[in-house]
Structures are given as structure tokens and as C-alpha cells.
Length: 405
Image 1: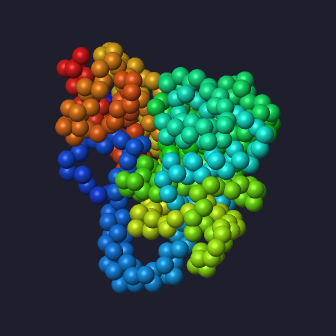
Image 2 (image 1 turned 90 degrees about the vertical axis):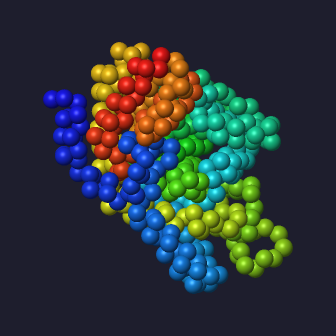
Image 3 (image 1 turned 45 degrees about the horizontal axis):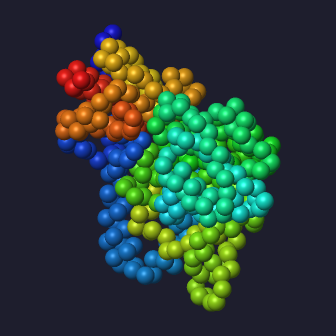
């Protein structure tokens, strides 16, 4: 069977094929392979946005706050927790950006472990995670303990065991590494950190909506993630934060705003934190930016995260097959895990000079993205990407790689 025929057979057998038609068409694109960076918009999202502007905002105006907007950070958080995070109600909130929520939770975590001076992180984590912790370490006079991770791999339990001790306040890693797609063993790393008395925090940006997450079962303390990748929330869509219920009375986030007050509209002197997950709020919620999440969570709930993961693995297996057949002879190296148990939702291909490939690929209607050093990330989103689309996109990569040495 030819690779094209194989792609067609996989599409014919795909139980999620019907969902591709739910997304708005992109006439200039022949292969969108960047779902791990920015998801495609749903047709339902366009309708919801129009209805919201004309109806809830346009007609109800300020009355919309008492119609339910004030509760959206919590109700959407609970829905996200149930559909994608394995989190019981009352532990997830939608608000702010990933960076801001990282700061809130990490500062609260280190302050909740007074006397402990170390924070453990890895050298290849996403820049915002590293930058935020560098700033907190400077503020609180903490020591950062860096674990060197291979850009083609990711963090392991053995590495964590070597550095955590009774002086460790917090460990922070990504569930899926942004560069390689390495899928970390969250329960094992949590167990190791907890044995030392440290809190654990996870960045879920590259896993939520693609890889099953079970925050409650895994014993996660804190987590953050964005909603514009596999959740298709749109550019700059709000992030989410998870705070385990048993920690909500003892952790205090540092950005004290009126929405996190126990009685926001009393507007009195002095700050008194709200109880529960609401205390993670600070300013006015980004209501307009939350609208797409309603449609996207409906879609994910209908498809089911386990089915999404099953197709994701088939898609990335097919990427590996095409890379081995077409690109390896051209000097292209796969720098992502080949084992399904350790691979997230994307595959990174590497060859010196690959940065020169991105612009002609985009001009050709094939949209991956590029990460230094020399990495082309292929991130097919299971609900919007076909196997034939992956075949078409990788064939253009092959043709351009032959020309651009």
C-alpha cells in the first residue's frame, strides 16, 4: 500500500472524521500542522461570538454581569476540569494568561513552605516558566536548582530524585515538553517530590485537550495551562489554574484584586480573600475571550479525550512513518520520543538550516512552526486534522528539504 493510500485508509477508519467539518475552512492552507501552537476556530465559535456581541453584550449590556458572567471563571473552570483535566469541581478557574497564573501559584506555593529555600526546574522548560521562577527567586531570596534536560527528551523521575530534599519548596515542570513532545511521568515525579515535602506544579499547555490528564488521581498540587492550542480558544485566549482543594485554605496568591475579595461589590477597606478557588481571581474576568471555550468544551466532551488521544497517537505515528521514509534520507532527524507512552501530541524534526524552510512552507500553505535549534514542530490536532492532510504537508516538507540544503 502506498503512503497516500494508507492515509486514505486511516481517514476512512477514523471515528473522529466527522469533527473536521465543524471547523471553519482555511482556503489558503493545504495542511495545518500547528495545532499545538494555535488551534483552528470552530464554526460554532463564530456563531457564539456573533450572538454574544449582538445579544448578551449588545442587548443586556451591564446586566450581563448578573446574568452569569461573574461566575464564568468558575463554571467554565469546573467544565474544563471535568472534560479535560480529571479535576473535581471547585478546583479550576479560568482567568488571566498562563504567565500571570504561573506567577500567582508559584509565589503562593513558595510562601506556603517557609524556611525552604530551593525551587527545582529544568533547563528546557518553556521560557515563561523559567523567567517567572527566576523573578520569584529574586523576590523571595530563593535558590533555583536546575535540572539539565535533553531538548530531544524531557524530565525524568530519576533526575528529580537526585535533587529534591527537605529544603525544596516547589518543583515545576511541563507535562508535555514544548520542544520535543516528551510526556513526563507526573504521578512518579509527584510521589518523589511529596516524599521530600515539596509542592508540585505542572504546566499543561501542550497536553490539555490532546493528552488525558488526571490531576486529582495523580496528586497534583498546582497546575496551569492555556486554552488557545488544542482547546481552540483563539489568539490570547485566557488560561486556567488548578489548585488542589486541600491547599486552598493555606495558599494565598499575591495579586490581590477586587474579584478575589470575599465580597467584591462591598468595595470596602482592606483585602479579605474569598474562600475556595475564587481567591485566585484578581481583576475583571475576560468575558469576551471566554466565549469560544463554551463551544470548544462541548466539542471535546462529545468526542471524548480518550478518543482524541487514540487518534493523536495514530497521527504522530504516521508523521514518524513519513519522516523515516521521506526525510531521514535527507538528513532529517526525529527528536521526539518514538514510544507512544512517552510522546505527547507533536513531533519535532531537526536538520541544520531548517529555519530557512519555514517561510517557503507557509507560502505553500503548509503550516508547521519552528523552534530553535533547527526544529520543525509537526502538531496535528486530532479533531481538525486528517491523515491525508498530514501526507500532503509532509510531502511539501520533503520537496522543499530536497531543494534547500
